Image 1 (cartoon, rainbow, N blue to C red):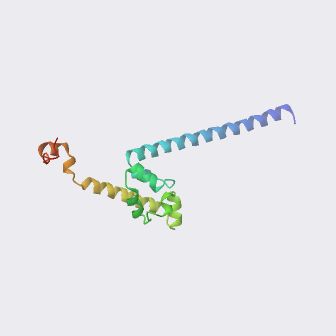
Image 2: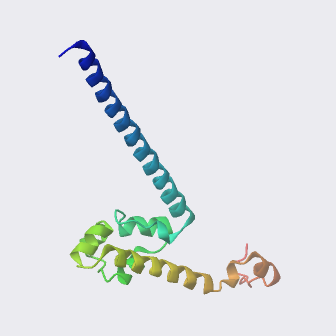
Image 3: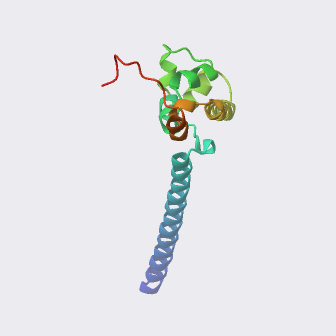
Length: 142
């Protein structure tokens, strides 16, 4: 094989390697963008950001919903070790699609938030407290 053929083969291999590096970099960039979007959505409380790799415990903490409430919505007992598994594992053990499990959790979170929004808490309102102070018995007052 002459020098010119070796150089041509080397250039072709270098070109393939360069294309591979560009392709890999583009995929890493896209994955980072997707992760950032998911993180922003989860941080903002968007239930669409729930993913199969999350656990019920993690979802409970991120979305500020009691873990027991989420477990009961997907029919998992409080003592079941399944509650600490990923949603993908929970769905496969319950023999249902993971998308249905995620949809159930999204609905449960939305309903919990709606219930919390509808609960009136007049004593926590600064306006209400200033207008109608609660009577304090004399023996408790300083």
